Image (cartoon, rainbow, N blue to C red):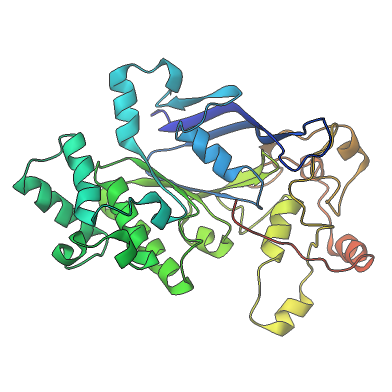
Length: 351
């Protein structure tokens, strides 16, 4: 069996909380014991609230930060043990597209220079061939005629055009995986759809895989093969049908927070409404870290942290005691709990 192109084993990343007061620092586990496999050619999406650790995990996978504990593996090999040739292959096959394209593109370089630097740096083509390669990559991401866009600076492009240039820059080395950290959040809705269509097209044509980090569940549902749900640095649910058949209460709450155009359907549905939206609150020392916000907490949640394991039904992995024991909350219990407190809703933002 082919090894995943990227894997994470026991990743931990810790930061000091800048908002802490007094002389004692408060440490935040942005990533806390994450195990993850990304297979070649698949689209894997990571969702969660602001502060759930999505972008921190992406930085570790891109080797832009070193984990406090754990390791990242490229095709089964630890990143810190790769040879020069292995590290060069990793950098070529794993590329990145960032949230703000205007900030990731050099404002003093024209588009042809931005892409040309990569072509010349890695010896992809020479002189006339380099210009033809750049034009072909711009055509491939929908920037036509390419000759017109090659002479523009980033500030002369719209947000969607800037993101297409960023995607072209990532694609020019023919990668096997692109890690896209919130690539849609700074774009209009119509442009978001165009970028998603472009990602699908590139995947079909080149077999490139994507690790898509997003808070837009509708976008994720339309493109992802598997979905990972993160909460306070941990993976709480992962699988192919996570957004269709959610098992963890946090996943259900994320889905319930989506707006429904039909007001009758919106009023009739049973919603999981969380007690607060403060995702940066320190997790409990013992037990499940979601228990203080969970409407279905039971006694075991106070003392034992649920591991990520297979559920009683389906192929998803979920970290929840209720699902492990086959005890799923019914509509009567859910309604009783919701009616006892105000509807505070759930704020979903980029990480």
